[in-house]
View 1 (cartoon, rainbow, N blue to C red):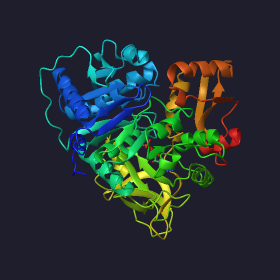
View 2: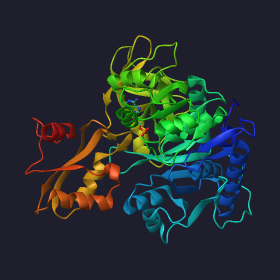
View 3: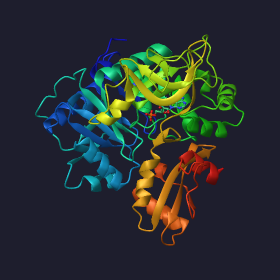
View 4: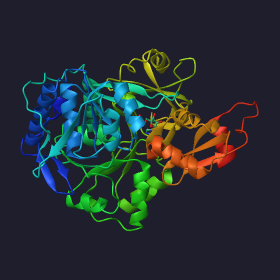
Amino acid sequence: MSNPTSLADILNSAPPNQTAIILPEPNIRVTYASLRDQVFQMADGLASLGIGPGDRVATVLPNGLPAIVSFLAASIAGTAAPLNPGYRQDEFAFFLEDTSAKVLLCPPDGAPDARKAAQGKVPVHDLVMDDHGYVRIAGVSNGRKSPAADPNGVALVLHTSGSTGRPKRVPIRHRNLAASAVNIVNHYKFTGDDVALCAMPLFHVHGLVASTLSTLLAGGTVVVPSKFNPLSFWRTVRDCNVTWYSAVPTIHSLLLARAGDARPEGAEKLRFIRSCSAALPPEMMAKMESVFGAPVLEAYGMTEASHQMASNPLPPSAHKAGSVGPGTGVKIGIMDGKGNLLASGDRGEVVIQGPNVVDGYENNPEANAVSFTNGWFRTGDQGYLDADDYLVLTGRIKELINRGGEKIAPREIDEVLLAHPAISEAVAFGFPHPTWGEEVAAAVVLKEPQTEAQLLAYCKDRLADFKRPKKFYIVETIPRTATGKIQRGAVAKALAG
Ligand code: AMP
């Protein structure tokens, strides 16, 4: 492994003929030589469209080669801003404006809501891929050369759900991503022989950094299905000789449900299975280890840390159920409300330091003031360090719903509901769900009659599927705590049990 400081460096670790990417459905293999060529050609294409350092390149793409090539190319020529293809037009309009997108890249004939949101505001270009797995921007002739990637430049901009309805913008620099990829490669001892199956979306750090960048940095191969499919998952693992994969507990539970008690063919090549982005119940971990026959390592990641902060280690070191493991090249502390670091075993807020941690939110001094204390970044998660320095997460200070790893700010849903003329009060909340971990519901007080079906239909036009309340509680008054306050946890308990 080289010592990378940018995403351009990450592409230099493998021999030219080594396979970098496998697309299993059309069965296309892309070598490192081809991937490098595509990325630098597209970076020049973006420069020819007027993209320079810091300019945001929004993309709305399913998982696949176009998502990977455009992410790397955009980060070199400007800044990549991948958006969730599940968003609705209003949501795209917000993200295109908030990121100041200079250009939007879409699949040909795809992403209708994003195209409508961009109309008259942001130029849209199609990404096309030929039968050999070569991706380019349709109709662009390269006239200008992109400058080399700057380690200090912002490679990627993503949003995280805030305590207000407005998501916070997280600028992630090349050096942050490179440091994170190095940490992950070292922790799991990746080599050029490793083959990762990317089961997570490529508009989150989980899929981008853990599955993709760290594997590329080790000179290994990333297998990229267009979406997670429990029916073809193990066939792909077997046919592509996959050695590890990372996913959220929701995906693990869907795979377990299909497998029954039989070890799926192909699982014997797995060195380990990684679980991250939401809590893995210890009984699910035990079942996975017995059925899939591979060590299951729970990790802890977040966007502001360019993904991984902690992970359980590979055997023969101990991996512990209910813990996310020790820091992985990241310093982890536990802090009280006054900013004091606490002793081992004491519960408090999890705080982190390291070269993978971003310098701050973009254009958001209020969020930066409360998120950094004495050089530590406050994660908003609660936990303690055990006697072996393994982190145990015990809860959250921040107000968010974690639905299968997707983070949702309940305030954002409240605001959409309060814009409805028949709703006078609205409180969204999460409730426990067997597959998603948490699911979204909302309590509403009405000024005029509305059925639950009408409210569901209203949300369908305005909120991406994952954010939409799946259940409405139409109430006379919102349940309050003993002291008369509205607390989402108390509303959830009173209504959803
Ligand atoms: P994101 O920025 O979307 O990656 O979300 C980061 C948040 O996901 C963290 O601050 C935690 O609240 C949560 N999270 C990540 N990994 C875990 C885990 N293993 N167990 C529980 N929560 C997790």
